[in-house]
Image (cartoon, rainbow, N blue to C red; front, side, top):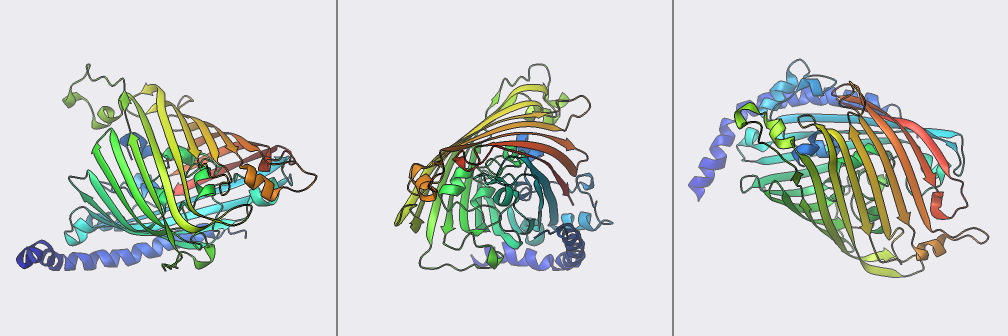
Length: 476
């Protein structure tokens, strides 16, 4: 056993020391570059896969992928005079994303004719442990976040669902710090450390096109009704992902649950585990079929791998269940519940495809969440619907056009707890959203957006709100 350890780990590690020193020198230089860009982006302070998904990943999902090569065309700052190429070859990859929203309530809501600006800078590093230490199929990721800006929703709209998905923890955070290990010829993936459940569970890249956080990230009632950990709030966690075939996958996870997990004041630096903490367990099973696949008219040597993987109409379907054991779930009308549970489901399907190679066409998605404990659930039932078309307009093949709808049924117990005499009782809130994302370059986009919030707060006392604005983002 000792000789095996020496030959498998110690000798390769020593032989790689010189390469590691060169990599570390480049790391120091790249860190200066990354943080200079991030600090510049954050200076605007005014107060979260299958092959068919890889072009529409959200930043926190893209950060998990291990690319086969560094492509400077996908990054605004290029390869830093060759530094990023050398880093990548040695096993170190730097990532940085900046996204912002500027929008305003033009009519209705609690206080119309106001606007705000919010932003989100997400940055970090990936370490390929196989290149660095001969640790086969190992990956280490560390990331940070800086958010800033004033909530339009809280101050001027009055809705339950935030019209700006970048609101929540408006300050710097240390986010992901985790180790990932692939096993069984990459069919099994183990992830341990600090991260959020929303990075891997109950989320779709399609959600990232919505400015409203009723869709963006996760279906929102999972976050309303549990201690489901979500970007930018990380917790101690472990997750197991099993992909026995390209069509099926199973995800299992367990996450720390605590009264301070959504506390922004610790900046993600409170790593403690206390006796009052509980847990949230999540199980999800997924199916990713490819309908109407037809390879009859071409042979393998004449078809690109991209065409083989994307030809046909891809779909993604999953169901999940969450159970949380924690003694401090506060009932709206007094007392505590010692557990929370619920279910969620998602289906998206491409229903029309222009050309297989680039995925142009129409995708329809539906997502729903059901958390039946009305004594602790703000929104026991929610359903989201969406249409997402890639390349709708001529010569704009990479643009996306989106139409979204959100319906949230408000708990009667919650409605009673917030009811004001002489005013209506909360029943439901709805949101209709339309947007078009202009993919200006490989690394930058601009997305005008309009939202119509129906019954903000669910009571009928606040006029329906029209919110217009835009989101923009760049990959550094």
